[in-house]
Structures are given as structure tokens and as C-alpha cells.
Length: 557
Image 1: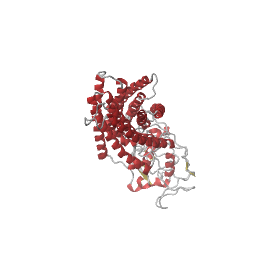
Image 2: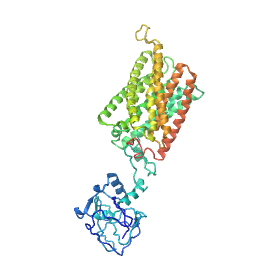
Image 3: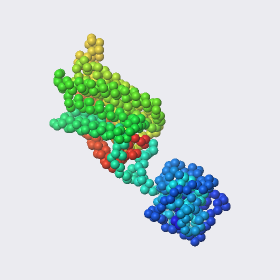
């Protein structure tokens, strides 16, 4: 006869005996003198046999009445290998010391080293052995189980057993952090590819933003543009690779495309695909066309960029309308769950103004004005929606405090809208043709006045960006993240716009101190980019991301 095994119910235990939960006399459990507990049975001796039905309904006990919730039941099922039809058979009336294969189910469980004792209570020769769970019966337990009183011990052992986390990858519940404590089983590439999410495009848009920042540096040295060109080429490679893997994911796992774009968390990262395209358009303008191109030169490429701009504006506007409409009609979010990612659907249309500010100066005069007009409208739409989202974000911070440690880098996303708008204002004003005059009388809204208005507005918006930047920095300093998430890239791309706006204001005011400040921040951003990139690569290797329960396809905040 085997030693007592942990049960599955919380019962009160004394230091000398096990108290039955029923009044004395209602359950007759004969003692079995002369028996003594056996050592734990090794797993190699485990045998299985078909399940048996419950003997009688009156001799069963519903586990829900014992206070075991669904989570505990799942843990017990994993520990004892119970199926959805498990039962425990009452074998306490078998007073003989022999195994009764007809009445006792075979073991299919792990036996702990502390099995001969129960939470410090010695198991003597008169203690009846409790029944053993059967793998193929129902989730009902007999009164003998309650009498055995082993539930508390089982729950304690299971809670502290690290082997449970090694069997299957765990998926965190909403509001809980990932479990990074135990090693995870190594999965093949195909299985991991199912969790290759839209958030990977944050790598592309951050790399593209870095190439654009290098091209805009006020203090250049020989070879700097070559470095920027190399980063631009690497960004193209990243974009092609990420897009290929995303398409492979959708082909290998049908239904994942629809599931990803409608997911309550991953769906917010769909706009990063369009943001990556925006960085490719602006970088192509900087490294392939240039700012000093003469009339008639590279007209084919300039026309291609113009066509790409109009297609981008149409797609970005459609995304902003459709995605927010879907969110408003299908999802319901509490204020305490507000995250900066809620701003992402409006980001692509807002960057239409940034693209316009970069490409308008090299376009023909008759096309520059429509491009700037469209960019100004899109920029105003993006900033207006972002300001409305800021109200929710501040309310969430006031009510629920800062996000959890691992997601605080996402606060840098709030830096983006005002900084990119400041950059767009100045760029679009300088991109206007010198002959621009809306009234054709030279009295109002000429180019010089538009530039002055843009500089004043950009100064106001830069201050808002700086405030959000400081909030994000202090939040991270208070509790630095320890485990990589793709949201770490928020520390790169939005801050790229902040630094570009700083440099643009420095050039407008012709202030060398501001320009050197922008250069210093550019160096810090480069260090941040390399740091995040290194952690990104490490997280892929150690399976911290692209793994079940570790990516944006689950809700964990």
C-alpha cells in the first residue's frame, strides 16, 4: 500500500490527527491496524487501466463546493494528470494490505518526497490510506477524500512546484506580468512564427527614423551621409524581412490575419506598418533625391515619391477612420487600461504632414502647394485626435498611476504627436514656393509670414513634447524595465521626432547652443537604439518574444 497522497481540498488539520469534515458517526471508516506507510512509488511502476463510473451520486462531492476555482482545478489537473472525467475511488474499506486492481485505480501522478508525512503530522499505522486519483474518471471526489484531509498539503506543494511551468508555456492573464522565472521549452521556428506580430514593424520605423535623423544633423563630418545611407539600406532589409515573415505567418496559420487586426492589443500595432512606409518615403527623399536637386533632375524619382505620398495619404486616412470605427463598435476599454498605443491608429495620417514637409521643397511649384495643403490638414487631424487621447492618458495616470514596469517605455509615444507636428509646421512653411500668395496681392499669407507663424507654433508644441519626455524618463528611472518587449522601441522613434524638431527650431532661431543640444541628444538616441537592438536580438534567442504568451497577441496590461 502506498503512502498517503496529497488530496485537493482545504481542510483543517491538527498536529496529531486528521479531522473529518463530517460529524462523527456519519462516515464509517474502519481502521487498518498492522499497516504502515510505504515509501513513494516510483513513476516507472505507474500503470494505467480504463476508468470506472461513479458508484453512487450520494457518495460524491462536487469540487466547486469545496472552494476550488477553475485556476486551481487546472493546476491540479496538470499535477495529477486528471482528465475532464476524473474521479477518485473510495478504497478505504479495503482493510487488507494487498493491492486490489479491481477496486483501486492505478497511479498516474508525481509522488513527493514528503509523502509519508502530512504538513508535520506523522502518518501512523492506523491512518487509512487515501484514494488515489484516476486519470480517466470524472472530476468528483468521494467522502473519503474529504476525510483524508490532504487538500491543503496538495495545494501548497503544487503552488511551490517549479515543474508545473516546464510542461506547457503559460499565457499571462490581463493585468499580470509575464512569468520570466523558469526556462521555457525550446520551440521550432514554425511554432514561434505564429506569434510574430505587427509590433515588429517598430524595428523598421525606428531604424528609418534614425537614418532620417542622421541626414538632418547640423554638425556633419565626412562620411556621415555614408553612415546614414547604410542605415537606410539596413532599414529596407529589415522591412522586407519583417514583411516576408508576416506574410509567412498568415499563410501558415489561416485566420491569424483577421485575428491580428481585430485583436484588442495587437490590432493597435497595425499602424506601425504604415509608419515604416513613411520613414522609407522620407529617407528615400533624403538619400536618393536630396535637398539641393535642380529643376529637371531626377524627375522620375520625384514623381514616384509624389505618387507614393498620395497613396500613403489615402491609406492612412482610411486606416484612421476604419480602425477607430471598429474599436468604438466592437471593443470596450476601461480608463485604467488606457495605454499610449491607443494613439497609434492616428499616427500614420499625422505623419502625412511630416512627409509633406520633407518632399515639398523639391516638387514643382504647382504640386508643392497641394501636397502642403493635404499635409497640413492631415497633421491637424492627427494632432487633434492625439490631444483628445492625451486627456484619457492623463486621467488614467491620475486614477491608476503609471503603467507597469515593463511597459513604461511606451510613455515616450506621447512625445511623438506634438514633436512631429512642430517639425511638420516648419518644414511645410519652408517648402512653400517663394511666389506663394493666396490672395495674389502680396499683402497677406506670403511665405515669410507663414514661416514665422510656423516657428511660433512649433515652439509651443516643442514644450509639450519636452514635458511628456520628462514624464517618461522619470517613470523609467523610478522602475526600469527588466524584460524586453517590442514596446521598448517607443524610446527611439517618437524621440527621433523630438530631436528633429529641436534641430529645426535651432536652425530657425540660428541658435548654436540649441543645435549642439540636438546633436548631443542624437548621440544619446543612437546609444538607445543600439541598446534596444541588442536586447531585441537577445530576447529572440532566449525566447522572451516570438513565443506563446510573450508577445502582443495576448493582453497583459
